[in-house]
Length: 120
Image (cartoon, rainbow, N blue to C red):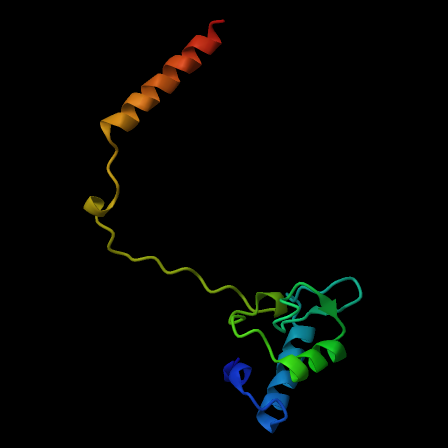
């Protein structure tokens, strides 16, 4: 879904209103959406921060009045999947931290303590 509407300042514009309607339809109809027992959805406006559940009409009014959280780029509370984390494929061993002799000495100390506790 196109999210450019989140940054439209004129919330009375047709584009903003159509986008809010589309967002609410997706949020309401998506089976993965996290609704409460009453069927209310989380409100994504800045002040609510996806912490509070409201009926669709109340969420719609909040969005018209205050807009949506600009940091809310992945709508996991409204049915959107979390994008997978991409890791670099060419990690070389020399980039990984090397264990030190201090670490090995500490490991031996812990082993000694464990051994002492077992025999008491």
